[in-house]
Image (cartoon, rainbow, N blue to C red):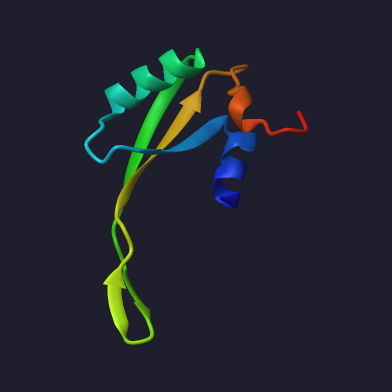
Length: 85
């Protein structure tokens, strides 16, 4: 999203969708192991489901968990840099 892109440009933070039962320690270890970077902080947010409607059909959007991972100065995740970089 646009907000996640601004976070990565200004604060060296990246946004991930994570397992709903994952905690900050597990998320930190996974990001450091997979991307070989140093994580400074991890913030998590639970996104609740919202009621949605399509015509006469009523349902709910799914709930999920988001993690905002801040990296140490000078660290980058090349996966998110895009094809132009």
